[in-house]
Image (tube, rainbow, N blue to C red):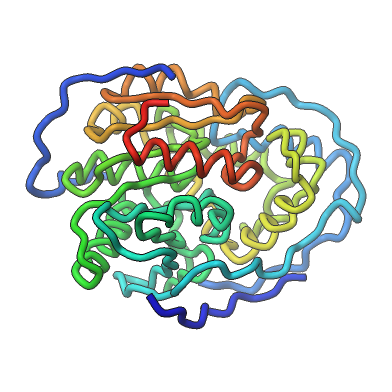
Amino acid sequence: MGRTEAPRLPLLGTRIGSGQLLDPAPTCREPAPSLQVPHEEIPAMVTRRTLNRLIGGACALATTGGFTTRTVASSASDIAFAPAPPDIWDSHGSVRRAGGRLHYATLGTPGDQPPVVLLHKLGGWVADWRGVAPALAKDRLVIAIDLPGHGASTWDGAPPEVQSVHETAMLVRGTLEELGRTMGFSKVHLAGSSLGGCVAIALAALCPQLVERLALPSCVLGTARTWDEVMAKEAGQAGMFTPKGDPLPSAAALSRAVFHLDNAPRIAAEQNTSRRIAGRWIRPQERGVALTDFPTLMRQVEAPTLLLYGERDTFFLIYRQEAEAQLRDVRSVILPDASGFPVQDQPAATGAALAAFLAGQAN
């Protein structure tokens, strides 16, 4: 596959278990009912009080436990934005969907195996996967997708109040069906982290004939909240967003405290950049996750599923027991001495675990 020019982004500085598998459905199940805007000036300083609010709010929509608030000292020098990361992809493209265009990047060449599709975290972009993708592209095509409003996926007009997980899953489905017609595939392996994992679960549940295997590194998989609960949680996130909904940058110390990162300065700076690009699309996507009942969706997933966590994670691991109970064909892998963001923090170990799973190896 020839290399094409990448779209220019702004520079901003085991339990092993199995159950009976059903025959794949011929069509997708019906989903349950389910931009770019100017950024305000970002403060150069984050006070200790603001950091405490940030830490308290970091789990606001995701969890009700498993996290301890602590004081994190910081300074302006601890807050940074990263330039656009290295472009490791062979090609870039976009697919027009209703209301916008979904950007994708590819690595590797099509082979006998289904391609693996990578979906990034909330406020992320395809570059989140650049350390993992090469390990997966050795014997198959890798397709990474920017979710709506993220990265180079541009959407018309202002973001909605809520971007439902089901709606995003169907946008990804339409994109994959169009790419499949031109690239010659009808099934995919699907891997998603955080928001990307939530979308991947919905896609696997609604379109079982499309998803061969499902991998979920570091995913929030909770029960649905009410709208009042979502609004109450957002009220405690004042230090994370401007009044108009633009994300505020976070300090490396915060990322280190919440996710126990080894490479906190680099990851925090990259996340500040990717979140600033996602802008006001973050909260609608976050609300969509909070309003979704993932145990119900997980019970509908037929594909063999991998739950992947870092050993030092205290954020996502609290969902493991429920996920293992609801998924019918599941195995869990804990990466030794890895953090809550192993996709970006320990990409070699993450890539090896995902490659083994895609090859059908149990552990």
